[in-house]
Image (cartoon, rainbow, N blue to C red):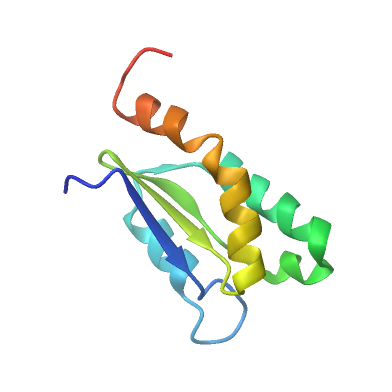
Length: 98
């Protein structure tokens, strides 16, 4: 409650212990598939291994939840993509005019 953004790092791969995306999908009320897609596209620019990630993004209440891959470089690249849209996403989630 009261958080605008929750970002997780790691746990988005294919190993048995990677359950971050599944857990996120279980708690969100609305998917933000465009965010997940943008992060995937950005990752694929760096490595074909990005297609093995299953990160999720969505909204629960008025909180945006975004999963990032676990590698340090992937986190940096993902944040560069996200920083431009996060303020607008927050406004939308809070019902503010565009």
